[in-house]
Image (tube, rainbow, N blue to C red; front, side, top):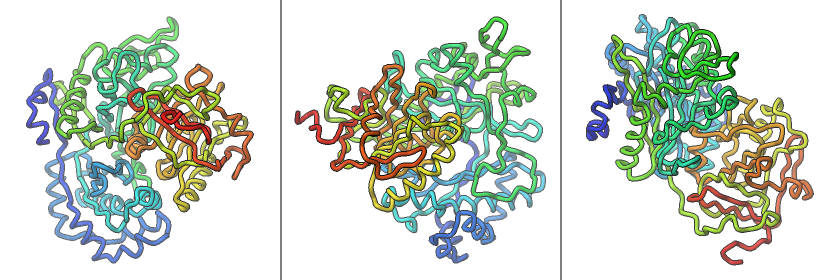
Length: 548
């Protein structure tokens, strides 16, 4: 908020206001009091299930003196409230904790006592999420001690508009001031944004968003051809269910969100500037909203025809944000296209955090090694640095791969990862499609804690299963922040190299219907040149390039 006020750029960008939602913070002393007065540490640090931990926390009591303050906050906000985590470790400049804990939303209700009950439960559920198994695994992976974690909570007005029983913003997104996937004439420092209709959780969960560089809003890869636009744009979106219902709080922080089809937004009349219309007769997509025809989420009227200055606002947010923080940043934002009485809408800046940058790559000749001396080679590599302490490769067998089995493969990988975490060993993970997508048809739906011991993650395309590489979720913020490498390899398009037949000939230390694990006698060498976006994995016994 202070940063926006310090920079007059944000005062009036073509009539659009840039601001922070109404916000209150519960400091860490309330967390301490809650944990100690309810004797929760013994339960929280035990090995009981997440559901049991949540049940104990929901039964516990928050300090009574908070209640009048909460009721006063309801009066000021008059809108649904997001209950977001803000822990000490999440604010660290050197360790990534974004997206590990829960964020709950509660609807705005006429019955303020009922709304208070929901708010208290949401706060307790966020506190409980510190001690879930995933968080504990993450703590182990980051060498942090869980009982040193302290949780503050942000209560924040949810950006959006109410449409009958549903509430959602026009758009939400995540922006990064460094783009590890520049295309055409984009540069890494031009930044990148992932934008979607509805609540931002859709992007965080790995849904299909629209990816573009705010300095090149006319060039959007996903809408560059008819096939890509129809196949690779957003078809679902999240809204907050304003029906109070009797849904009990769940370890799933999206328990009271609805995942709807974009078609469901048509009756809300909320899509006007954000969609184009597919004309099946002429086989073309027309920019704008027309009756009939499938609506395709292109944001064309905003990005190409500048009906709303979103690209320039986001560019200013990323440029000023990274200048003020002195390093590359990731931001979260949401906005309404139309304000009261048809006035221009508002862009809300929800969050900013540093992207932790790894040491620069030493060698500029990373890709000079011939293919036969490598296991993997990528021209689209994320991260940078040298890793020489990994001896295992866990890979999905191409010969038996079926996307219908992706959920089961995710469970199997979670078990495998647990054994690596317990042994304090790392591995390379290779498989087809998008790692971490919540849509299991697009890839294997792992969460970050389920692959936390991987040092390099590779998306490999199969001839019959070609999915666009994934972008911009909290999941990948964590990958880059940990210095975990990330390769995209598409041998069928002549992009990169993957010698799976070499791995298949080696003895397996573990093999199932879908997965194989190979262990080498000596570590393999992983080298990534972050400036050029190139990386490779050298076969054991091949000397480092610099020492050749």
